[in-house]
Length: 329
Ligand code: SAM
Image (cartoon, rainbow, N blue to C red; front, side, top):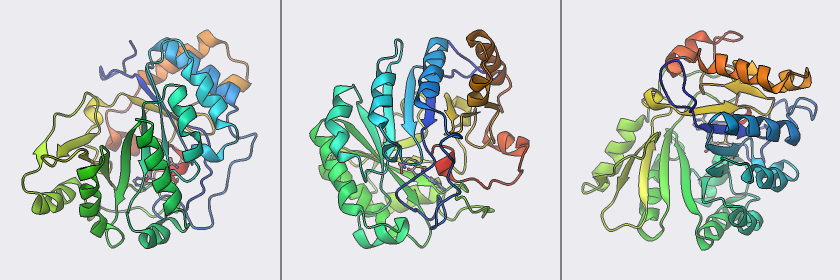
């Protein structure tokens, strides 16, 4: 079992396979995109697979593929299929915006994907366009239908943004009446790719819950699964459930079991650190597996206590300036 210097189990890897995205959600990246990574800067699929195999051998049990948008990287199903075959891996999952995903759902089912996080901040096509700058609402909804048809669990990620989509909170809760989906409201984080740092947020988890409780006073608290980042609830009689993720308030660091690898191969042991080891550089320098393993273990043993400490320790740039697309949200 892998543990860190604070006694927390590490068994979950989030691997971002590209920084590119086919949406332009304003809270994630500027409308004219990012300074995209070149092919040489990206980890190759071989490097990703080699890294995943090593980490699974060390104790990683769950891998989530994210990005950028995973489905904009060519042949992503090949990587997913190869990872799904790793001995010792218990769960392979992914986070997607759903724009290009629907045609791949039956193959995802075949390779054993049981749950998918689908990003959807509104049920209104007009607001979808104003948030994402792309007219793709129908494709996202088609992906949701397809996932449900294939009995793949759907977790909807909705970032709550003051003045943009707070009117969507209750309709999204209402979606759980007829559909067995889990709608998770996420506090907006400062990873918007334009260096705009907030001194706080207007819609934190307490306010989001208050808004929901006002309309649904009978909503009940569910038991949160181990390592859950969300506080989970259900409206009695509804098929789905509702979660709130305090991503900005960082209330879940004490049980954090996850590490991240960016498209450039940078290992992050906290969402808020700015990278603690570049795995791609080590692989390209010809490091042996045993040496890489030792380096990884050292890194896990010097992990920040929480997201506040990690943010304080950022070396390159004290201020957060990157986009969530380069981190793997
Ligand atoms: N393209 C995929 C998608 O849209 O799901 C995966 C990558 S995206 C960066 C992963 C998640 O991060 C999405 O649910 C997105 O809403 C969330 N995200 C991006 N920027 C964020 C921010 N500034 N605050 C909170 N969540 C954010």
